[in-house]
Image 1 (tube, helix red, strand yellow):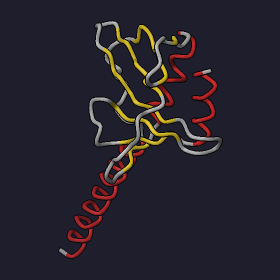
Image 2 (cartoon, one colour):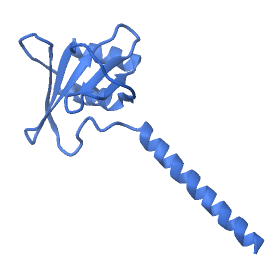
Image 3 (tube, rainbow, N blue to C red):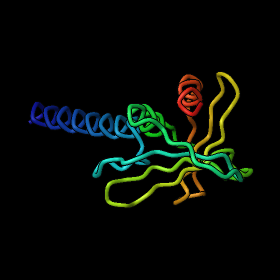
Image 4 (cartoon, helix red, strand yellow):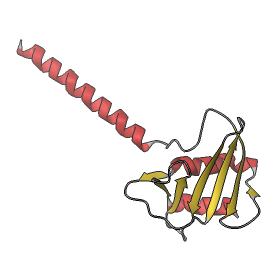
Length: 137
């Protein structure tokens, strides 16, 4: 009888550990800022308050979406200044996603915010920030 209890305990502990590990991994994976159900037709940006839109080369779409998808959600109360850039992702179903972007200095984290949820910010790591700045030049 005791052997059976130990086996049940081992199964429960193993199952719980596995489930917690899967949930932790899911939280560390990409966020859901970029839609994956449709293709992107264009990515554009403009400086806040400036006329004119700059188009990102189609060959750089994957790099831009990887940077956005890799941004880490931050907790806390959000109180931000006007964004430096507006970044818009256009999809084949004629839907758009607008992001506000604050570009940081070298090796610092930049900040990204979806226009659909202005109560949450995401940080872009310093190394990805440098790559993003190159793409936006």
